[in-house]
Image 1 (tube, helix red, strand yellow):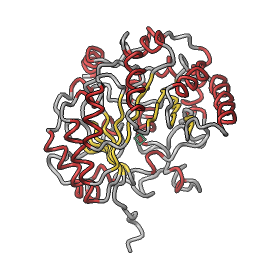
Image 2 (cartoon, protein in one colour):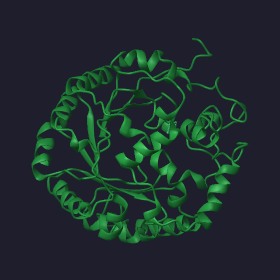
Image 3 (cartoon, rainbow, N blue to C red):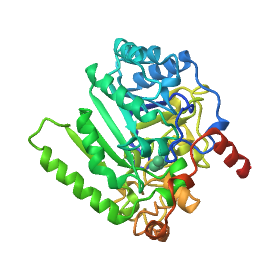
Image 4 (cartoon, protein in one colour):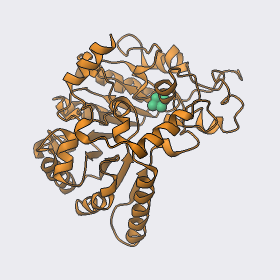
Length: 379
Ligand code: FES
């Protein structure tokens, strides 16, 4: 065995980002800022070929996401193909564009799981964040319809400084909708969320209060039949050690963008690293041999302080995308780590969260006009 080469296992997770089209404009979207430049999308046949290859390699879970995957008219066909190949399939949706008829078609095609995301627990805040007045009612109706259909339903609420104080109402809404699992995920700072970080990052006090509320509900629900899981994800900006992002670079996770770029994480296209297209290479070649997927495998690439750190096998130096966004160099240790010479950036962001009074209407919403404007400013 070559000790210098890390052992590479096959991917387990395939994330199919079917499209960047989306009717909502959430300012915390993790899609790339220049998404409006990417108009091409793989055809039905091309996606099915990707699924086939991933399944042959050993992938077992397939997530359909976007943008909003419901805008793809061939979604039932894609679900059926994935299911026939033996994938466990999960639709990650805002619920906008979902209809009773579509839920029937997805069930018939064999979809296993639906995750609906909400912006808030009330109509006004939901509308302000989603950039759509009708979204909240539609989401409520569709969550009920999904449940009535017998699907295991995950409700996902993205939390930030403007809604985290309503966490009790959010949990109550999830109980009312009979969610099976609830994810209260404080937004992670990629794409549009990073652009809007000042206006989104909660304070440490907000997070501590929210944690107390979650704990209170967990105790209260211990003996009830409410959701199996109440997951609360805090932002890593308040940690002293980084997360082992994606379970390691090119270790279990494979993401494919609408036009077919293969990435080791949903956010990696921003890195100055060349990533291959599924239209030019097989997934086998991409996963095992491509430069991009091998770039941060193992430990040889690591500079100090990661290289000699006893925790490197646990956290892999943290998140490459975060290192790039905050330090300009993806090789650096993730600044979340208190050992990183760039940790000051995280401390500044925490400080900024204490001082800012940025309003929702001052955030940059994820839409085509803003994307084009940002791209123009950058070139
Ligand atoms: Fe890309 Fe963490 S999101 S490595």
